[in-house]
Image (cartoon, rainbow, N blue to C red; front, side):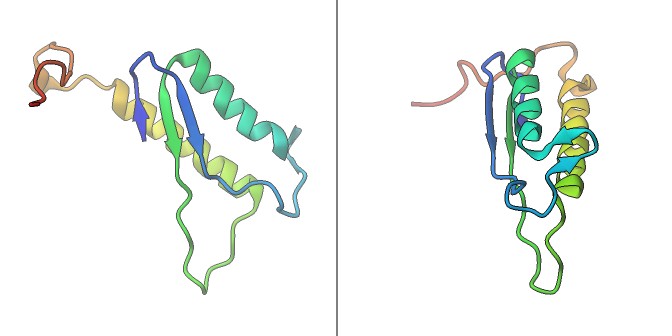
Length: 101
């Protein structure tokens, strides 16, 4: 989930710790969470990573695969959030003033 709201928040349930891998390339597994959190806080966006549970027959992915999947998902969500919606005719999307009490 992503929101370009200028209200930074990062929530993640990625399961990277406790895996056999200590490093992903030149980066320690401990730093991966920090990289995502730093990006979110400096970009002033809200991001929630939710790692889905696998079927019992599938093997849990390693930290490298999980990190790469999260980075790709972040990029795809950012691309979608930043895309101009031609249906809005240049008006910023907002629910302000439209929610009933």
